[in-house]
Length: 230
Ligand code: ADE
Image (cartoon, rainbow, N blue to C red):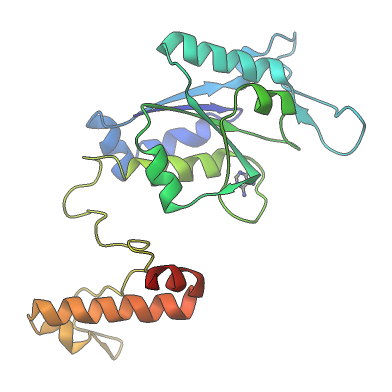
């Protein structure tokens, strides 16, 4: 899978992509990440990328030309037809595991990171296929949301996680949150590991974990619990 990121702040992505599982996924050739600085595509003398909003009001709006030309450059250089173009915005559909799953089957994904008050609506009308929010709060830009999308999608691509890190047994599988984990030592600050996990009885361990998942989901996320019971 190839991720193409359109941003005004390319440096934000480099350090995240050169650590841990993302780094390994790139080295293994499971994902490729291309970063484009929208400012490089501005036709204006001073590489301007924003302007005052028509109709007045506070803040600046990202102008359409540099974004459109970045997009054209991406699809022309990589020979991409009808790509998913995801604009990160608090106005979008709220991100979820099932959305990550849907995107994980694409060959190319273009991510558009907004700044200031937003981007010119005509860019959304012309090239954006999906508007995605990472939650009901407002950030200063779309870069962190883009990283969250890339991370949540990449780990679903076959071969990105090792068997050990497998995503088979985790939160949101069957709409249940994950059970608690314990490792050594057996006792820490007076708190003991539950006996069942030391019993060696796999069936009892599985049952305990499933019960814990149900209990935690019911307490913390009644909305998911309802879905899990369906
Ligand atoms: N840009 C600013 N806030 C955002 C959010 N919550 N989700 C996606 N993009 C954003």
